[in-house]
Length: 129
Image 1 (tube, rainbow, N blue to C red):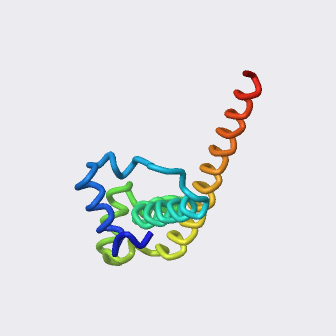
Image 2 (cartoon, one colour; image 1 turned 60 degrees about the vertical axis):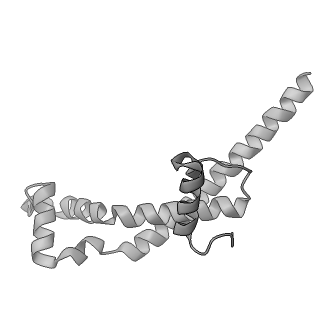
Image 3 (cartoon, rainbow, N blue to C red; image 1 turned 135 degrees about the vertical axis):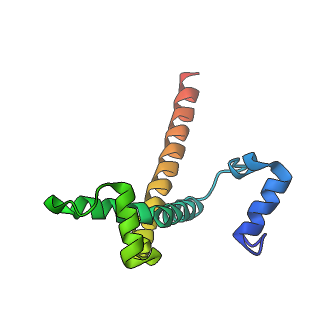
């Protein structure tokens, strides 16, 4: 929001001032676009961090009857030995994009739905008085 040069600067400032809990406290209602951006960022980070696990899961699923791998650890060791560490990141770009878009939509819709329901409950409570 232009208050900090980088996201890590913002995180350091918040943690120094408010502690870890400060990262989870919302001082105001966020705008729809802010919720969508937060969801996209969370989805993209999640997609990137879980890509190596997804690569191994996919390899184990498609090995078929040949049982190329003897399990999860063997799969990881074989990939590393035969293809190198970079193989664990195969498909990271579309995965990050896809999960980021999904996170944006999901989190944006979730927060909008929560605000609509909260407003509806507030109006309903007023009518009952």
